[in-house]
Image 1 (cartoon, rainbow, N blue to C red):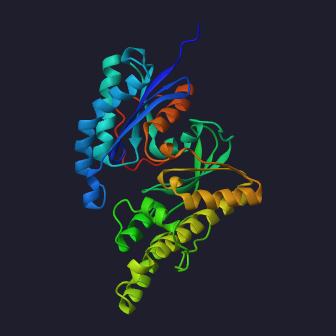
Image 2: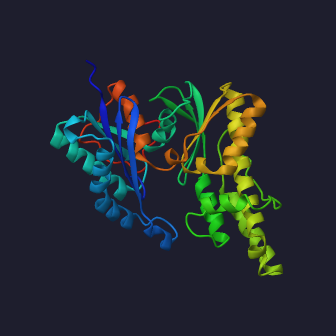
Length: 338
C-alpha cells in the first residue's frame, strides 16, 4: 500500500500568518490570518508584524490541520519560508517549524518565498510545462524567471530599484489612497480611462525600473494641483487608470521581449500584483495575439499563502532536498542561492 506523503507548510514572511497541509502533491487546506493593523500606519511595521505572528501561528496551524483532517503524528515533513522577507516575521515561522520538526522527529524543508510564488501554478490545473517563463510581481519583487524545473530557476531580469507593487502603493499614496493602494487603483482604473501619460524608464535588456515613473507621477500631480487644487479628486478614476496602464505596459513589454529572446511560449504570472485585473487582461490579450499559453493562478494563491510553500516543498521533497536546524532565516536570500 502506498504511504501518502503529508507536508505541513508555514508562511510568515511579511504580515500574513499562513499554514497549509499538502498530501501527495495536493493542497488539502490553506488558511491565512491577515493583519489589518498595518493599514493605520500606511505600511507594514516589522515589529508589530512579528508580534502578531506569535499570537496567530498556533491557531492558524491548528485550523489548517483540522480542515485537512490531519494529525501531527501523520506528518512526513515540515516546510517553512526561510526568506526573503522581514527578519522578525521569518523568525517566528522558522522557530515554530524547527521546534515542531524537533518534537516530532520529522525532516525540515526550507522554502524560498519567490520560488514558492512560482510553484503556486502547480496547485490547480492547468499546470505549465517546463521550461516556462514566469513574471513574478509583488510588493517587494519584480522579476522575470526562467523556470527549468520545480527546483531550478534562473532570473532573466529584475527591477533595479522599486518593485511594481511599491510603484502602485507609492503612487496611490500620492493620490491620497490608503495602504495597500494596489487593489484600490485596480478597482478605480476599471471606472476610468488612461488619458494621462507618464515617462517610463527604458532599460536595456530585461531589467525593470520604476523610480523614474514614480517621480514623473509626482511632478505631474504637483504641476496640475497648482492650476487646480481639486485636480486629483476630479480625475481620480482616470489617474488610477493611467497609472495602472503605465505599470502594466512596462511589465508586459519586458515579458514579451523575454519570450521572444528565449523562444519560450509558456508564460505564467505570480505574486500579489498578479491579482491585478489590468495586468491579467493585458497578458491574456498578448497571449491570444501571439498564440502563447498563459497561466494565471487563482487569486488566493497569488497573495502570500502557505499552499504555495507546501507545493514548493513537495518538489524539494521529491529530490530529497532537506534543511537542517542550523539554517537561519535570510531576509535577503537570493533565488540563485536557494
